Amino acid sequence: MNSEKHLKITGFSNISWKDAIVKTVEEASKTIENLKSITILEQKANICNNKICEYSVTLDIVFSIKPNRDESAEIVDNDNM
Image (cartoon, rainbow, N blue to C red):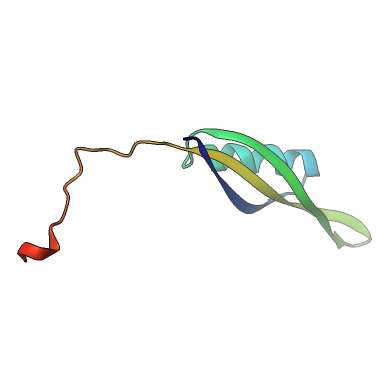
């Protein structure tokens, strides 16, 4: 059985929304395996001195959940404790 997990992440850039998206996906890929897709949920910007100074994006990042966990992990038997 294949399963997916959805994770809501907000990222920032002082360059553009596209840069915020790219940087957020790159950062997420450092700690999350099997990334599959993103949906852009929200785009915002902060204004400083009448100009956009920071872009932010909120993403729904989807990744696959491995069907079999490491079976060599120790199993705790609570009845024998």
